[in-house]
Length: 251
Image (cartoon, rainbow, N blue to C red; front, side, top):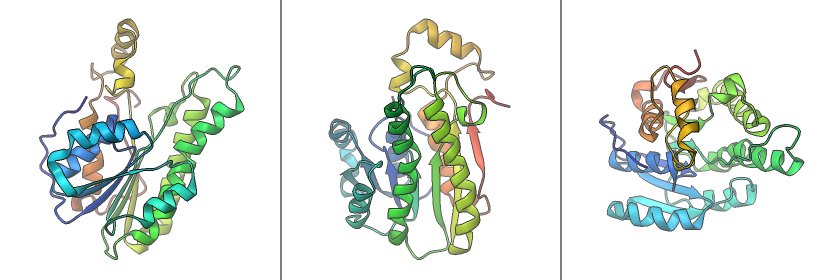
């Protein structure tokens, strides 16, 4: 599900890399940056999602570039970075997976798979892309965390650990990279109406929705708008922060 933003950001002549950018929140991010004039490189694991996104975004022509990437493998992100068709200004670390199970039932494989993609993947993509950033004072790294990183969640030991780690890396990189022209921030979405949430039983969705003070699930555009603000010139003095986009679920 995608929705258009009413915000008028201008990213003409900006080059953006969006990981996991061919589906869900990532696809919305790709679409909105393209609509705002940017060139976008989509790093996506699913070849099926890539083909679907190519069709949906065909109108943007050569301004969108797709590459099949496994963010959990450093050699894959290195290869993608080396073939990037432009010098990057903005990196959105969005790629992620879930393997939810209670702690008693969670296997080492379940834990490692989520850590490798959701945490190590952020390190791999950022590390690989560093030499490909433009030599400008307005570079941006924005990583998608989660509100569960702030309060925990039953059945998500692996996911919460990874997303909490993303926040820790964000704060560290903000300190280390600010003098090199970077701002580094994280966005922590709450429950967002993606295909994964849409597939939930209606009763389960209703129960969750009733717990959200705003009275509704987030939209992919809500998350994308926060990312675009952090990527904009207007946010040039914001770094090392985590913006929760969750309808006041966690306050």
